[in-house]
Amino acid sequence: MWKKTSKYLPPHQVVISEEIFRLTGSYKVCWICGDEEDLYLLDIRTENGIVMEIILCGDCHRIQEGMGLKVIDAKKII
Ligand SMILES: [Zn+2]
Image 1: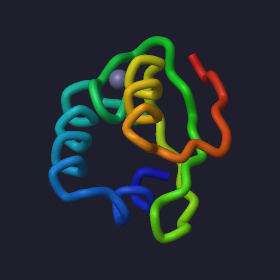
Image 2 (image 1 turned 180 degrees about the vertical axis):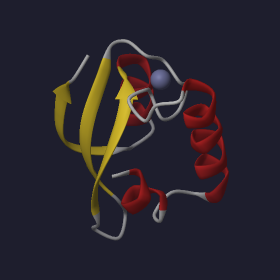
Image 3 (image 1 turned 90 degrees about the horizontal axis):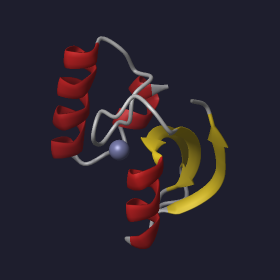
Image 4 (image 1 turned 60 degrees about the vertical axis):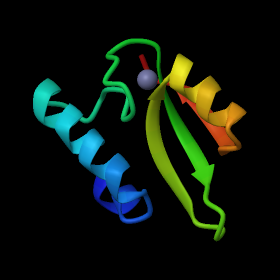
């Protein structure tokens, strides 16, 4: 899931997320801030219409949606 999604993310975000995965040893963390609780699996649609999955915590989910992230579906996973 990360391999597919990372192709469509801005390069700086990929670097940050890979650092988070390295530190936590898991992909099941918030891909923006590294939180391990209150996590959501989101289906999002990019500007060019590509649908991909990301994992974000509740706070980052709200912030990103406020910044215009198009969330199609959100499932709470932790
Ligand atoms: Zn977060």
